[in-house]
Length: 95
Picture 1: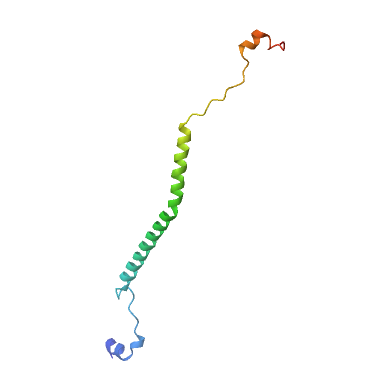
Picture 2: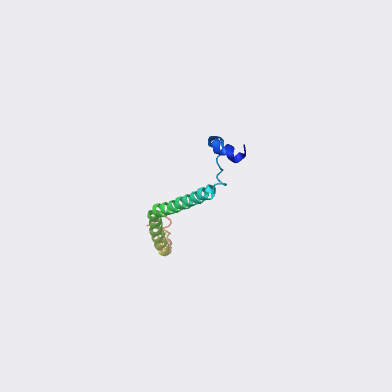
């Protein structure tokens, strides 16, 4: 009995071809690659959508911050004795 006859008579004993032999490996890898790409695109879209409000708030905060920094603060007058007080004698406690 030859190998072909044996396989014909006992088909359940023959082994199934591997994925690479049946050319299913390329299809499996291609499908996996496409799924990975779709997942990456979904993550990027979700990231952009969730970051939009934060970006808007950051833009407004930056605009407010720069407008306040451009305006110089008003100088607070310092209390220093006037030279006229010394002339009038008020610096020594005399009125």
